[in-house]
Amino acid sequence: MEWENQTILVEFFLKGLSDYPRLELLFFVLILIMYVVILLGNGTLILISILDAHLHTPMYFFLGNLSFLDICYTTTSVPSTLVSFLSERKTISFSGCAVQMFLGMAMGTTECVLLGMMAFDRYVAVCNPLRYPVIMNKNSYVPMAAASWFAGVINSAVQTAFVVQLTFCRNNVINHFSCEILAVMKLACADISGNEFIMLVATVLFTLMPLLLIVISYSLIISSILKIRTSEGRSKAFSTCSAHLIVVIIFYGTILFMYMKPKSRDTLNSEDLDATDKLISMFYGVMTPMMNPLIYSLRNKDVKKAVKHLFNRSFFSK
Image (cartoon, rainbow, N blue to C red):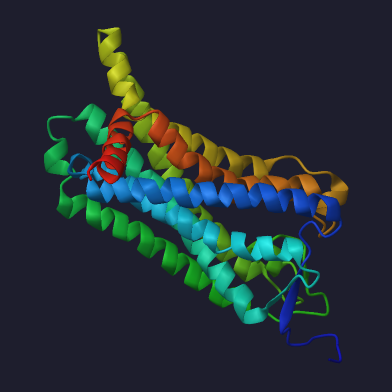
């Protein structure tokens, strides 16, 4: 194929850790183990939230959605990343890259909005426990979850559509493990200020607004908990939302560290992404979905009881 100043790309090269071949085998094993844990852990949470009637509540409905979301999110990139670690040909077609961008951003946006919905659910449970069954009924929490998915799909469709319409130049090397939308945009030889503006608006609407809802909800929750006179009552109230709070801290903490940490002038003026940034990105993409079911199962008596009940019914019912 003859390259000109501008051309139609048919494929991208995913650089990943190709500069560190010894690390590729190590991280192939580590990510494969993590991916299996993600599938088993989140799959188990989905299964018990469906089969156990005691878990047919808004909180576990949202948790089931979060687990399904984590499986989808990691599946959009992890299998292809594992293949690239073992393959000498680390390429992805333009259409495959577009699909990966769409699915990755859709899942990421949906998780941001869903965590905000879950924070509101915990606020109602702690601050208005008597009205909780009325406010968080099926006619409320199902549309809330559906709205999270809808927001993710619409945001991703708009942003992906604007990116694939860009003109790309000679460089087709994506310095990342997957088709991350910012990494792809950097390859364009056209003005991307419009794309950046759309992304800024989307970040405010679908990342910062849910974060604001989370902060407000937990401010009111903490204020309500501090008014409880007994330490046992405070501990019981906090235990209902501690797992969600830990998940939020890990999820948003990783995002803030990844995108807001100080960068050197050389890094800012280049398109290179060092190995540390790539590993942080990998942590965000794999570690968080792996930790979610562990956090909810270790800190939740209902989940532990449901898992034991499911295990006993499966192996000792005969």
